[in-house]
Structure formats: C-alpha cells, structure tokens
Length: 116
Image (tube, rainbow, N blue to C red; front, side):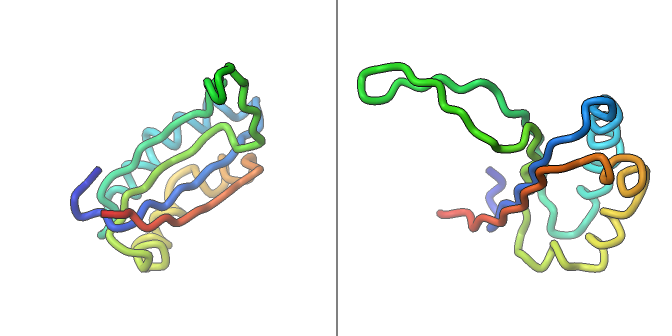
C-alpha cells in the first residue's frame, strides 16, 4: 500500500449487462486516469467479485454475498479529497456522468482509515 495513504475510499456497484463493456472501457480509459490527477488521490485499483469457497470449521463453505460485482479502491491522503473542487470536477468529466452512471445500481460507498 502507498506509504502516504491514510484512507481508502471504496466505490462498488453493479451495471446493467448491456452497458458492461462501455462501463469497463470508460472506467479504465477515462474515469481512473482523470481521478488520478486529483490532488490527494495516490492510486486506484479495480476488482470484480468472484465466487468464494472458504474452509472454515473443518469444512468448505461457499460464501454468498449481495455485494456489488465491481469495486474500485482509491488510496487517498485524507477524506477532504472526496469533497474537493478538483474531485467534483473530475467525477463529472467524460462519458461517465451521462453514458455510464445512469446504468449503475446497487451502489455502495465506504471510507476506511488505513491502520498503521
């Protein structure tokens, strides 16, 4: 983890299946590069939910979850990054606000303090 990251902002969501390719293209090629320019955003990692089988109590168990399929992990210096003018401008750039955001659902946003 980035040494100067004090917080992790996690944005998770599902997307309508017919917009999935556009969602991934815009997220990777526009949204992430734009948000990486915001002062205080140190790095961004994307992930997708996978089937989880876990050994617990001597037996394997499939863990079922209603968590969204997609997540992005933003390592940031402080919570004020998320309410800065730079952030507000960046999240409204490109195709994201009109061509992608309206087709997302089950959105969850979490801010975590990184422990030393």
